[in-house]
Length: 138
Figure 1 (cartoon, rainbow, N blue to C red):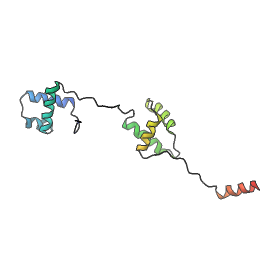
Figure 2 (figure 1 turned 45 degrees about the vertical axis):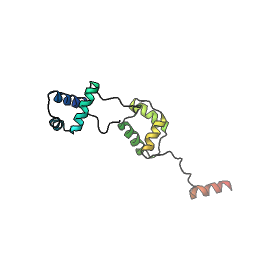
Figure 3 (figure 1 turned 180 degrees about the horizontal axis):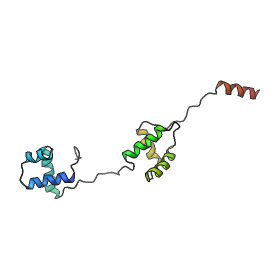
Figure 4 (figure 1 turned 90 degrees about the horizontal axis):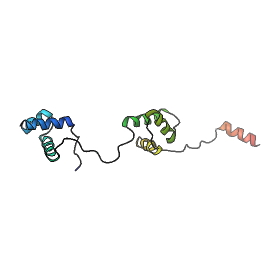
């Protein structure tokens, strides 16, 4: 089963084990650490089964960009009036963060922030340019 809440730190788990070995009551330990008695009980059971207090590693590949780096990328796009392409932002990321990532990763970050790739709308000629074009044609 996946964890239901936040993981406890190794120090906190070690403190629970130490208090348990000192024969403190379950409620007293829970009060000292500021967690529920069930949390204390689960920690003790896990320690007895595995004989260590280490957290298990997460499955899946860890993200390439941190939250801070994602915010910087989105901030750079917000600042600029004319948007840069994803490959251009990728090279900027290489220079700023010293990390290489795929342009598709940058696109994913921007899409999640609400930016989607679009072609600019073609604007009609202004009246002055239209008049000059007609004069030239004549």
